Amino acid sequence: MKGETAMVTAVITGASGGLGREYINAVIAEYPSVDAFWLIARRKELLKEIAGEHPDKTIAAISLDLSEEESLDIFEQLLKENTPEIKVLINNAGFGKCEDFFSSNRRAQTDMVDLNCRALMGMTRLCLPYMLDDSLIINVSSIAAFAPTPRMSVYAATKSFVLSLSKALHDELRPRGIKVLAVCPGPMDTEFWRVANVPEGRSRLIDKLPRVSAPEVAARSLKAAKRGKLVYTNSFFYKLYRLIGKLLPHGFLMQFTEI
Image (cartoon, rainbow, N blue to C red; front, side, top):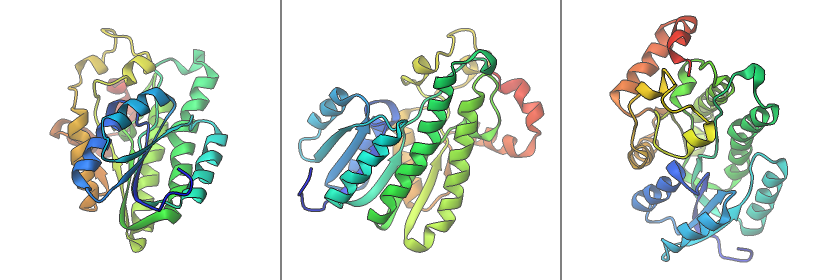
C-alpha cells in the first residue's frame, strides 16, 4: 500500500462476512467514484477471497484484531503512510455473547466493550482527518440499543453507546460536510448467532423475531446515510419497537427482551 497515489477510499471493518461483506457491494453500487477499499477483519484469507471477486477495484486486505489497542496504532500508521481520501467509513466490526453476566467469561465481556465501543470510536477519530467533503460514517448499532436486554446485557449496552455517539457526531460533524448514521438492524441470518451462542430453540425472544435481509440493510442504510438521516431501522416491525422503546418503561420491556 505504501507509496500509492491517494485514491477515493472506503474503509469497512468486520468486512469478512455477513453485513460487512454486503456493504462492499452496496458501496460499489452507490459510489462508483470509490476506487479503493480498505477491508479490515481478523481472517485475512476471507478478505483475500473477497478481493478476488472485485478485480476492477484496488482492495487492501488488512488483517487486524481491533479489540487490541496495538491494532489501532497499526491502522494509524497505515493512514499516515498512504493518506487516503476516505469517502465512506463503515464501522461494522462487533460481536455479542448470550450468557448470564454472573457466570460469564470476563475476557469475552471486556473484549466486547473494546471492539464494539472503543475500536469504533478510535477508528472514527483516526479516519476523520482523511475524510472528504460530503463523506459518510455508518456505525452499525442494533435494535438492542433501544432497550436493555437481559442475558445480552453488555452487548445491548455497547450498542446503546454506538447509537448515542452516532447521534452526537451527526450534529457535531455536519458543519464539516460529514454525515453520520447509526444503523439499528433486526436479527439477520449471519455468523453473529453462532458466535453469540444463542441456544437455538430455547430463546423465548430471538426464535419469534422476524429476520431481515443483510443485503437490503446494507443498500438501504447507505442510501439513508446519503440523505442525511440520523438513524436507520429496517422494517415496520422494528421501527415500531424503536418507538415503543422510547415510550414504555424499560423495566416493563425487559420482561419481553430477555434472551
